[in-house]
Amino acid sequence: MELVIDDILRTVGDRKLSHIAEKVLEGRRINEEEALYLFESNELATIGHLAEYVNRKKNGMNAYFIVNRQINPTNVCVYQCDFCAFGVKKSDPRAYEMSMEEILGKVEETYREGGREVHIVGGIPSHWGYDKYLEIVREIKKRFPEVVVKAWTAIEIHHMAKISKKSYEEVLSELKEAGLEALPGGGAEIFSERARKIIAPNKANAEEYLEVHKTAHRLGIPTNVTMLYGHVETIEERVEHLSKIREIQDETGGFQVFIPLAYWPEGTRLGGRRTSSIDDLKTIAISRIFLDNFDHIKAYWVTLGEKVAQIALNFGADDLDGTIEEEKIVHAAGTKSAYGHSVDRLVKLIKKAGKVPVERDTFYRVVKVYD
Ligand code: V47
Image 1 (cartoon, rainbow, N blue to C red):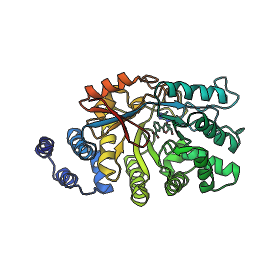
Image 2: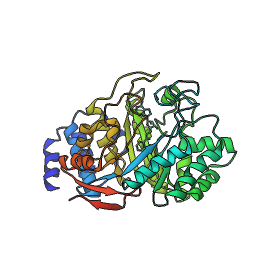
Image 3: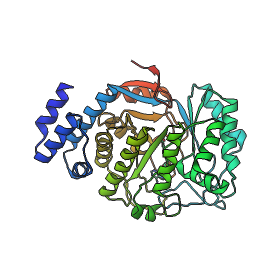
Image 4: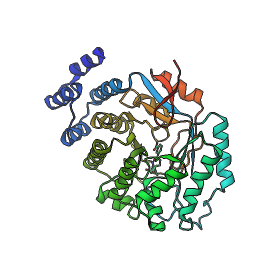
């Protein structure tokens, strides 16, 4: 690590950045204004070094992945958010809905291949009752008790509460009883009311999303949290998003990992452009530096692409997500990454990035080290 510190101090050319670097190296928290300064800075290498310094103190040379599968039971969605190319109306020729047998068949495939987790999220169809969400969790857990069910975003939980006229606490307790063990981080998008009004005006707002997560933490359900960036949000709104997350983590400690999600525009009503790799790496690195109370930052290879994800593992990220098998949401919006990866491929990607591949479970317990 000495070498990294020397490099950082040698390359810092401006006084403000130098002051921020000192704070980070001393393990002190940076404030919103300093995070903003980093976003506005072009000193990408310095920011990356600092982020990697923080990451190595937390995770050493480990880079994590999980053998998992994403299952999206339906793409029918009442919300029709402008940034999303996955959700469609029921009448759309692309609309699909998986039967329970199909869902269980996918879980079985994953289980036979050593899968530890199923990550289940989908569209929100108006014809599904609350029981449907409970039944999917219950049936999977009944047939495959060893598989961890990480299911339903805060948006889906909010919807379930609305249609069942129950509180978040009741819904989450009943899902936990049925076998749900963790919540994925999807649906956060960007917390800013201004930007949310443009990209996702109809679904649960930031307060509701965060209240679901806080309730889950109180009930002992760990959750992940995301930020969709690169659409209409400003840099200030990104920092505000990170700040809200850090505040809640201080209160509850229930977030396992932060996942910045780069926006893909193809096939969306919102349109726009792809993020640059410089923006992707900066966002990962600043997240790592700012979120000092998070253990893990995920470089989601689906949105970043495999190459940038590898670089991100040296810019503060310590996790690639997993084998996934069949990613559908970001592929609908044009990502050119694979739909899934074999364990061999993920191990190679991590080794070539200079890190030690570590297979983990949903809760970041080590399953196998590929030394
Ligand atoms: O909430 C939708 C995003 C998310 C687009 O918790 C898009 O471990 C880019 O949340 N371009 C779902 N992104 C994926 C997600 C996730 C993925 C991996 C791991 C975890 C975890 C969570 O995908 C949505 C939305 O923010 N998304 N459309 C798009 N056009």
